[in-house]
Image (cartoon, rainbow, N blue to C red; front, side, top):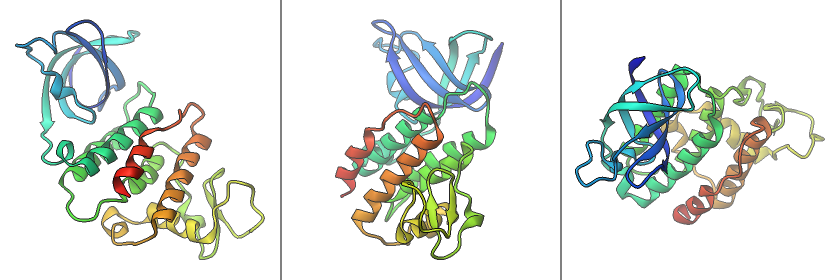
Length: 241
């Protein structure tokens, strides 16, 4: 079946001297792998630079059931980045976002709300001006909601502690090893509850930011059994420090 869909590039793997397999999260079919021929030829019809990580695309694809690798007929950019590839801070955040998405999404099932969130958020990162140093924190918590394990915001009360294991805020200070302290719990609630525009006005220490990122990654490990260890956040911490 030939179909049109939007897509987000998550990974490319060399397949031959001139061809690649691109792992693309699509609006219509979920996560798919596409064999793309000749992208590294001098006069390639589809250029390799159009398959950069998190590129937003319009695709015409052949979708055949029970095939691990699909074929792609046409590809064009849906949105051209203005700043993201050229700003090391934004590109480092994008690298983190890409790894987080790639480690979290494995289903070959469409999820329109998730796709729309990713598509719009990638564009938002590209156009943002001013302070965006904590963008990745907000993205990671909001993404957890679309993946089905977002924090239970309704359980929050001032002074309650967040439990990473069950995603709820509790009064009991004798929680297990996965509890956060009051300062961390408040920030976790704010990240979850506020829009990015409101969250970006908050100020907190570098130590708290690093601790919060570690808590968020631990949260993913606890709720996604197949979640692989992350590495891009180490680069991100260095760039944004």
